[in-house]
Amino acid sequence: GAFKDSLTQAQKDELHQIALKIVQDGKGILAADESTGTIGKRLDAINLENNETNRQKYRQLLFTTPNLNQHISGVILYEETFHQSTDKGEKFTDLLIKQGIVPGIKLDLGVVPLAGTIGEGTTQGLDKLAERAAAFKKGGCGFAKWRCVLNIGTHTPSHLGMLENANVLARYATICQANGLVPIVEPEVLCDGEHDLARAQKVTEQVLAYVYKALADHHVYLEGTLLKPNMVTPGQSSSSKATHEEIGLATVTALRRGVPAAVPGITFLSGGQSELDATANLNAINTAPLGKPWKLTFSYGRALQASVLKAWGGKDENIAAAQKTLLHRSKANGDASLGKYAGEDAAGAAAESLFVAKHSY
Ligand code: 5MM
Image (cartoon, rainbow, N blue to C red; front, side, top):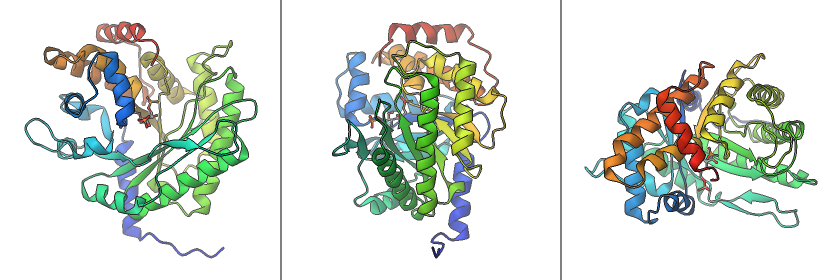
């Protein structure tokens, strides 16, 4: 049908530049946008009460890590964190911007059931989204995130599940772009289930096809977006395991089939993988023997924070050690985003043992 471009060239250029900054060589995103309930589970694991003081303390630890900007180009914040400051009174957003790190904001308001489906959902938060996006842009954010969830079952994801989630991601993306925020489009195909690698690949391809059809229908400017997908892995309860190389090949194959070359970058979620698997798989993705027209990097929550939380344990005397752990995992993933991850040195062994001790997220 007829198309009237709603973004000016200057708006497009700004969005494209932000996206390119986030996926610059050797860097990726720290997803620190856990909502109050989710961060509560993380704090509970180290016996800390889930209150505003402890949430501020923890995020301060992350964002004041010396040299964080060496491997981190963007940080996703939850609304409460966006409004918080360091003990010295500097806003977290200003602290990040000062380091050349782009602050981002989680805009979705969570998953709700999709009536009539077999346990499928959609993500809410479109009401007043333009006003919220404009306020976060004004407050220094350069990008946003919206997470949709799809699950693999005998009869899922359904046509309705894929169509609805693709459409809501597209609506969110247009609203972000109109307000100067690069939308990170996150259609997460969960790894729960007994399915094998081939099924995970097929479902990921189908989900991506729905997403990019919707983004095209809604006139989303692809150069000013980023994709945050799952890696293609066998289901968590699958009897068949896959090597990093097989995961890398399946993931890049699916992405090549579904993601337009105009998209500047793909920033993977870790989805409950161990820290070491998330790093090794990202490296295998970048070394897979296929053409890759986009940057392939990380936007990890759990796989950047599990051993950091453990090292901290809520104690002030451990802050420096916890920050060292964060820098170490960020470097490992930054190397993996270049296909140059060569395994772990001594500090990495620490990260490994910490991870094994905390096996289930
Ligand atoms: C960090 O967790 C994010 C927010 O989760 P809730 O809405 O449950 O609080 C989450 O969206 C995250 O950014 C992505 O799922 C990627 O995180 P992982 O841990 O899978 O790398």
